[in-house]
Length: 613
Ligand code: AGP
Image (cartoon, rainbow, N blue to C red; front, side, top):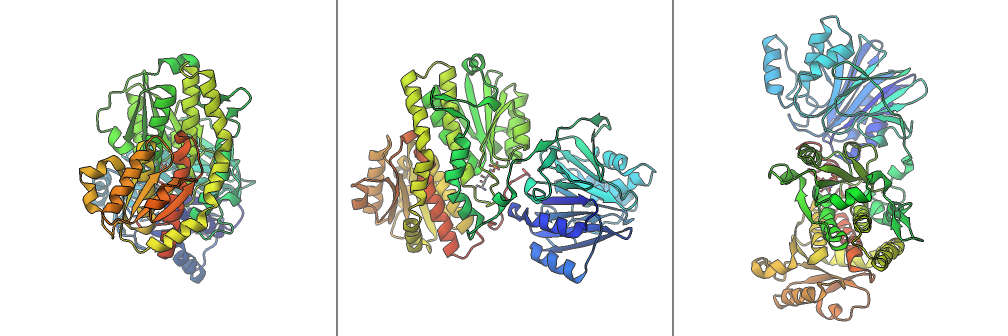
């Protein structure tokens, strides 16, 4: 997902924008640029590659001014090079803009503009927008009206920020659909615009998140919000609780390692304030859930992508087992195209760290269109998935910067466990004793997570043994099948090793043909209802010469006699076991990727939030 930063005020905009872009690096990009109004002229500096190149360019060709915008681009249309990097100017040099999203009708717009004699200087879809704005600006309307006329011609999802040398007292920003957020930050005599909070948090915590279809006119004095039809809109200023330091690496080498170790804190925070331990009750007020509504729910569809999807798979087991509500799980990008049988007696529950994933938002829209109630479990406060839902649960994990999701996987697992208890309680299917027992287990969650993290050196030793492997199988059963998928995803996305998660029971139906001395098998075998089945899996893999790394419960005396290596987790209730069996797998993937000298926090080809379909 691209990054946007804008500034208007009395300071030099250039360093504010460049440092803001640096805080958005984690989103993944392949070119970057900045545009600043200097002595009445728009000056642009942009280059392919990482921000270091842009910093060098700005050092060699300095630019300074009190109004500017910047961008980190993830190439969709046009090579990642200086020519296609944002910001983009039109023919007059009086308008400059940056853009997140895809102009789905850009070819026809480009043809139309070229027929009017417009010359294009890039291969991007974005460039059509700035030429459209110039077309309307030449008709003696102000920048906001010109922008509105241009944006009303675009198809697709967009986040756009622009300014003009003709009206140097304002920045115009707009959001259409779900191409990543646009947030306005309030300073004293200065204002900020960004695509995500970390870019501006060191300057302000008073922010307004744009909704889809909103246009912000930002001046030194403040903000005017309008719809794309021009009508004036009210807005709500949110105060962000996040600590900007939380978005720093601290003493860790990578954000991912820091965030793995933050799980004691993030699990504590996701539980805090939500459990009345005295009365063994769960409190999720933002869900807007009462007993009447809980009782009439006939089915819940859980939809998500990637890691969030695997959390959803665990959620299906938890909600069905505890609350006795039928649950279907769908990968979000499949849900909307399978004509799902959704009614107004159903809930569509989206899980998303960023809350901006296009596939997930589109699946939510599909659920809404079919009459379902929308819930979401999100980490990014103010994100679209939070704002469009009828009820939500925040993960409370703090900013997750590493592209590979870790704490934003374990937090929703606990949120889903709490949701299941609340639903079972409200539907009257959970006995007092069972509810008290389930709630009581939550007290130990941070301690169990800490116990897993204390064994990092043992995981590192195993990583050193298998770091040069080229393939790997992750096997799990029951509630830990999702752990196998998630463990494999962690490894493949940061170490580029071909790793595959598989339901262990399926091995005999073909995949066991893969197992030999060159195919390590990671077997997730805690003391849960499927333990015996996993023992047999480990024996079958060993019988074929496979090297087995087992995740096992402390005190197990059988598995050490079978497996080549054991990664230990504490004894926990099986319904919470996925929170802990995943931690050694997160650490294993992290250390293997580090040993292979790879860019752990920004793996190739990946973005932190996928805001395009
Ligand atoms: C997980 O490590 C990946 N970064 C990716 O699968 C991610 O979980 C997925 O894109 C969903 O993102 P979201 O949680 O922000 O919706």
